[in-house]
Length: 122
Image (cartoon, rainbow, N blue to C red; front, side, top):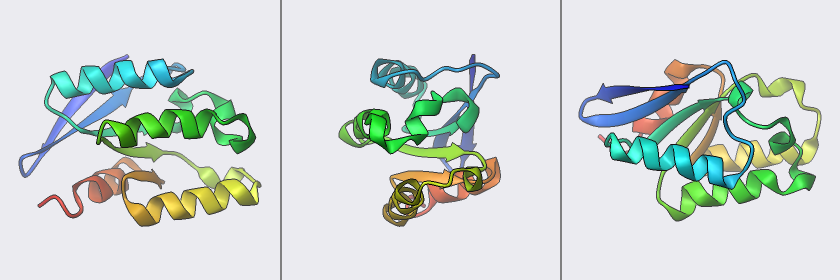
């Protein structure tokens, strides 16, 4: 795993780059936040493939547990992936509501992730 640091008009965004599963639980998320924070980034891009698949099954509670850490420690997150493959209405509603608030975002591309993370910060 590596973390690429992106500077957009003085706003630092950390992008997690990996082909592996990196977030299995809330402790993994905390470790990534600590790493990114030490590099000056409080905005993080994570790819869907790096997150435990059970995250996207809201009944497991994993999404709430992990995303609460981002909110508690005042980080903004963009998760990049193709979320159309999930048929759960509750997940679609969760994604919609998350995207409205802007702290946790589910997006289709890294460029879209960068846009939503710097929104309201410039």
